Length: 215
Image (cartoon, rainbow, N blue to C red; front, side, top):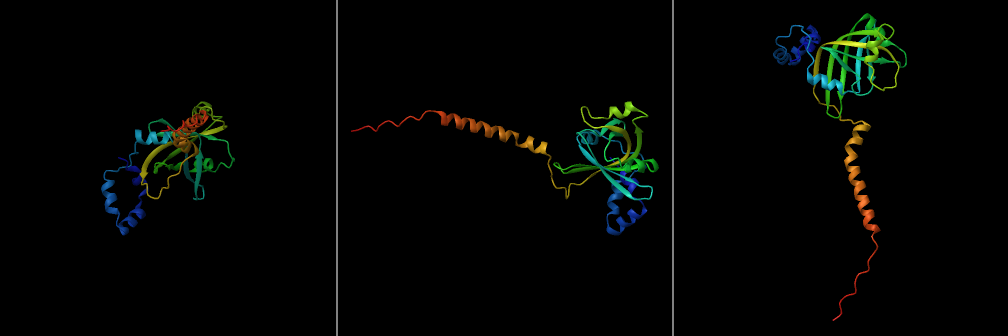
């Protein structure tokens, strides 16, 4: 069971608010035994991560401002490396380098992974390390999705120390173009078959009705 996510984020102020609003007792039972040991990623979390084509990553600026960035790529671009370590290649984009700069001073990150069709979301917290292409090209290129046309500049390696699944409430199902195409493909095939059968029936020469039998 994952406990470290809440162990990290439930500081004294959070606990006081939970106590005031009546939720603290339930969380005490859920988090019994939490001792700061990282939440181990299981096959469920790793399988979920491997299917994602985007996620949101939060870091903190040197001035203490939270910064959120969207990351995207082919499904599976965020990869499991070993143990509780995941990572992804950082492509050349608008070249602002805000996340990269943030991590040089504070390696803490929070990731938010969404699955809109199935109304699921996974939250991760961890420590991130930056590997520049010039320093370790093998590590960076190994994280590049095969055949993906993007220019890698570095890799982000994240050691996950906590994770938590969120409830599905208020998640509106949304579908990608590929998911919609896959869903309607059987119906489109059936429609095309019916159209072909109708065209074949219309191509049969019309046979006049036989005259009625006379008494």
